[in-house]
Image 1 (cartoon, each protein chain N blue to C red):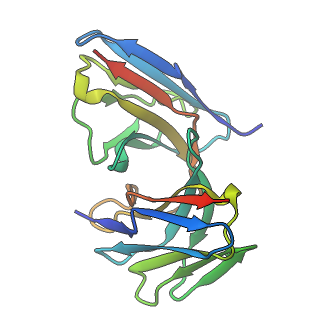
Image 2 (image 1 turned 120 degrees about the vertical axis):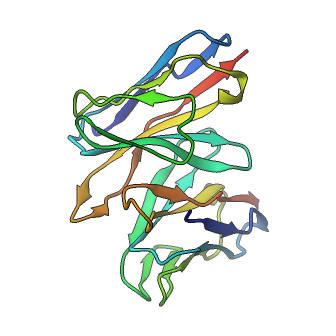
Amino acid sequence: EAQVTQNPRYLITVTGKKLTVTCSQNMNHEYMSWYRQDPGLGLRQIYYSMNVEVTDKGDVPEGYKVSRKEKRNFPLILESPSPNQTSLYFCASSRWLAGVSGELFFGEGSRLTVL
Amino acid sequence: GQQVMQIPQYQHVQEGEDFTTYCNSSTTLSNIQWYKQRPGGHPVFLIQLVKSGEVKKQKRLTFQFGEAKKNSSLHITATQTTDVGTYFCAGPDSGGSNYKLTFGKGTLLTVNP
């Protein structure tokens, strides 16, 4: 079954404690991306990756890091989480053909609370 | 940077009424995508429009892409309770990187049975 898998689904942590949210896709997609969703603000892109070792900033990259060492995995790293990073996070992947993105497949979401 | 505006932010309808949400971009879009997110769920792809003036239908849903490729709409005929959710449009960033997808803030549709 084609899917994007995120872990953990729920996490409560404290300010400053480094954490990683993993994301894996089994569709051999070139493009992967992280979004955060906050009430009234919709989906905002954090980072995206066009392929292995190719990443770039989205609209709200501050406080986050990513890596793309393998095509299927795209972890999101919060080196020193702060309360303003409390949010619902989605990982997504898609094909990218002839400069046009295909449909985005989203993971189930990871709800993060930073105290 | 590019802005994608969606209106209305909320829409409450009686079951059986029609519903329309509008998406407007500050720049010309190469394509536009629409997604639906059920309460507590994740966004799910509905459709992609690429051509100027394109109209596509999926059962009771009709999607349009404007002639200038700067606006789009989603119309639902005779809403049902299963249509409840937030509808998002998304378009690629036409300014620097074509790989950034900017989402509108979405329209939350609630349906009274």
